[in-house]
Length: 256
Ligand SMILES: NC(=O)c1ccc[n+]([C@@H]2O[C@H](COP(=O)([O-])OP(=O)(O)OC[C@H]3O[C@@H](n4cnc5c(N)ncnc54)[C@H](O)[C@@H]3O)[C@@H](O)[C@H]2O)c1
Image 1 (cartoon, helix red, strand yellow):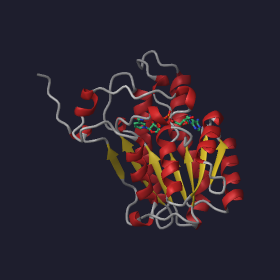
Image 2 (image 1 turned 45 degrees about the vertical axis):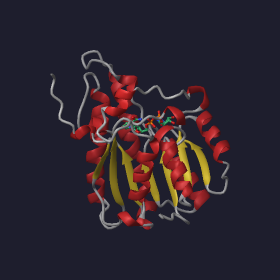
Image 3 (image 1 turned 90 degrees about the vertical axis):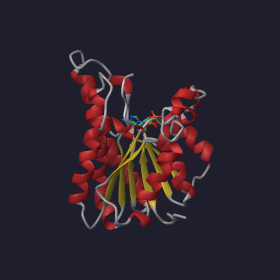
Image 4 (image 1 turned 135 degrees about the vertical axis):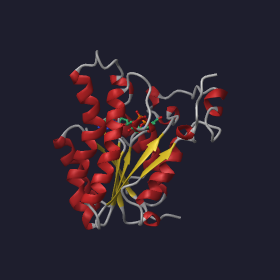
């Protein structure tokens, strides 16, 4: 079993969804976990639910703001002494879906700033601590870095950027910080939203069966991989991309 005792790991966007599952997973493996999320209502719910004040801390953070990111890093170091791991998971998805000819520059910028610049800012300010600890970074991209539906340019570009950012960082931090990226496919996060936004999963049999693995993904699928990539058993892995999508991106599709 992976043991993160004496390690502290920041999970951005960790108050809900995939990030919350990653935070819970890391706690189970004895890490001290900082959930850095802009939604303080979701953060407060998580703290109350997990009730682990020694090793879990919520820091209200907007990854789009350098000032907020610096505050998060300072608070983490004050509370836990150092930083051993960083999961750049915070992201927004559909808010900027629009035909490219109609997309506002504000919507485009907000998507890129949240999903890509946010990761850059977190790395920029966490790297000195991570390097000292020979730590690890896991970025959360998407299979939409590899394939698209119409009118998703901003999201796809942000997620593609994360894949490139990952291998560039892995080279810049060679011999000090390992950096890898996970590309999830369809992950049902309905059960891990804050109370006001939680709803029962509305998945059909076809939703599941179109996946070669036989089902839609769950947040724990991603969390288990993130924990592995942060841990010592992944010591020889850096700069790499890992698709976790139940086989969907390997499926040949012909129209009958
Ligand atoms: N769910 C999926 O099917 C899926 C698939 C592929 C990739 N992803 C990626 O996984 C990550 C998590 O997705 P999810 O489905 O769990 O989303 P979610 O909406 O359930 O959770 C995202 C969390 O990020 C936080 N967040 C948003 N903007 C932020 C900001 N500026 N600063 C700090 N926190 C912020 C939100 O408050 C929220 O708690 C995202 O990067 C998403 O693009 C999700």
